[in-house]
Image (cartoon, rainbow, N blue to C red; front, side, top):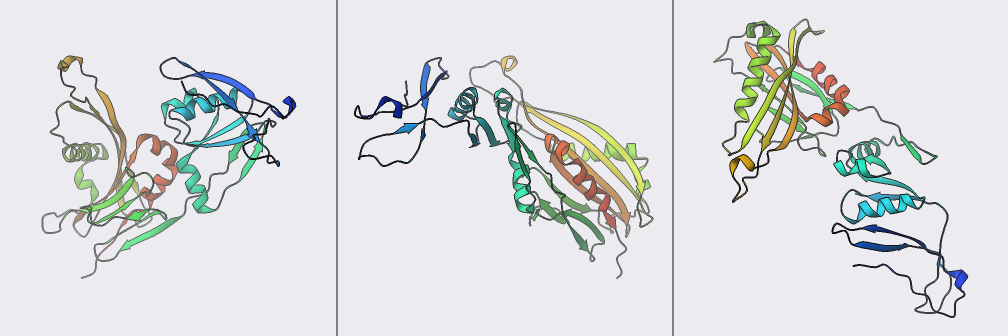
Length: 314
């Protein structure tokens, strides 16, 4: 049992020491006793400890959803302090904490864009969400263009013609692929059939690419939506959204197959924009975790709507 204790020499008057005491439990059920103290710098002999209690404080805890910080957050909140956790909001334990959680991704975006507005009052913190700035990528050689978030980085050697990735969420990225003019003779995106048929083909292609030979892997997939639109260049584009979930068990030894627990590995949204030009089928692909998509849907749709295919002059 670990203890955090304050020691005071007897020649100090008792009124100079004020402790805010509480207790909480560790994972084994053992009671842990803690004394939360706030020090005020005063002159004192070497080895002496003078501790006084302060009024309610605003406390920031970095990554407060694991191990001791969970209990510390509960304890500080219980004794009246205002706690802010700087962490990932998707952590399940966050729902059990009586504190205000600030999404780490949102804060980093706010810092980079220099648009942080804090309003502290009654224990709440309000953050103003900045508008996302975009850059335009134009490929005059292959004939396509699109906009992407300016803080995304290009990754070379990823297998696609062009590949950009979110530097903070590695599973969030976009790429462009197209067919070879020597092996295709597309005249319009309608050569794929109606948008619903194109959606089935896109989903089948994704499932083929993500096929796994691991034992115990199961995939669930569905076409979320399909649509068509005429852009300002006069060309028709198809938009397809699919969701794919991957489940797997950890193949425990000495456990019968029917007793193994199957868990969700990942849950992702895949969005494709299809267009035809230069006898080629072009596809803009966006991959993002499902929970991130819900947060960034507006920005992702701006990227999708910006995709254009252009005539290549030889």
